[in-house]
Amino acid sequence: MTAEGPPRTVAIIGAGPAGLMAAEILGAAGVKVSVCDRMPTAGRKFLMAGRGGLNLTHSEAFDSFLKRYGAASARLRPILKAFPPAKTIAWAEGLGQPTFVGSSGRVFPKAMKASPLLRAWLERLRGFGVQFYPRYEWRGWDDAGALLFRTPAGNLRTRADATILALGGASWPKLGSNGGWAEILAREHIELTPFAPSNCGFTVAWSEVFRTRFAGQPLKNVVLSFGRQSARGDCMIAGYGMEGGAIYAISAALRDAVAHAKSARLTVDLRPDLSANQIAEKLKRTRKGESLANVLRKTGLSPLEINLLREAFGATLSNDADTLAKHIKALPLNLLAPQSLTRAISTAGGVAWSAVDNDLMLLNRPGVFVAGEMLDWEAPTGGYLLQACFATGAAAANGALRQFGASV
Image (cartoon, helix red, strand yellow):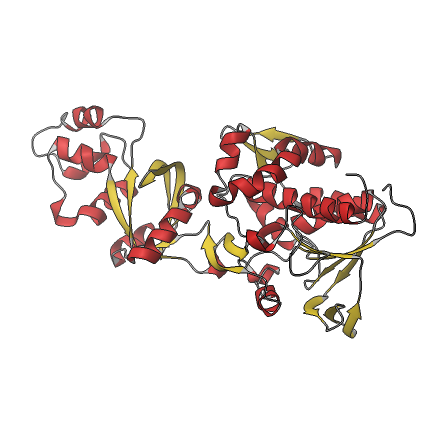
């Protein structure tokens, strides 16, 4: 820091990836940082994300990367430009966690785990003098502007030169992000966008026979389409409906359609690498009296996919090769409802962009910054969620430094 005088103090509320990244930047700048979290340990949702291999970020070109954030892209552009995927990769490798790019372009630590990276990160933060206060539940401000906490030792009132709120969204409440902060900010007349589930599964009215037989089985290498949006990948048949990466990629559009029209018609291409004509030719290579199931197997369809066709078309499932080929290329499924916030991977909604300035400081609360999933943005899985959390955490920290008169 270039400003003279005693070290400034910053209270960071929330020990997830956004809060910890803010702590790193501030701690490295010589700021006295306190990280408070109502959970007993830091980074609990970060560790949960690591169970699937810890997808840190994505390697695609920046303009394509930015489009993944939809309506929030314009506000996130300078933030992600300042802390792009390359910085995330360098940060991880600086913690002794080399990375690699998967076949899909996603970036992972070679260890494929979150725990080694988190341990190294927390050790670095402690080396910067960052203090951690677990089981500190933030309760807002008093009339004089002091921060209020409920702690194991009782209620606490304290002050800091700046505050960074990084309390997460409203998904995975057992891991700490329960969205309870929304009520506190609403009392402060801070504009909020209602929470909605993002990267979530959807209800489908499966028959009992199909549900019983196929729940828990993957539907691999398909293309899901809705309107102008499509996603290729895998998804999972669940007892309640469908979930998984491919459906998460277009979940925002599906969720909004269900909210408007009470349902959404999803189209599934079971054989995206073959044209309808190629599929029809395979189907025509049949022997007299051959069952429909055997005919369908000639296209490589699995029992799950065959029964999914029957689930979608029922008694109207034709044995005509050309018609069947069209069904395989465009199988319709009626989605009835998104899963709840508690079952969603991430959250849409939160603090409206109109409530913060370009440094992510609350207009109604000077000196208070917001970072991570608290802000009103959403993105699909694939590294986009963590990248935006890291980047907004960095932006909020740099905003605080600028407020202190430091050169950033």
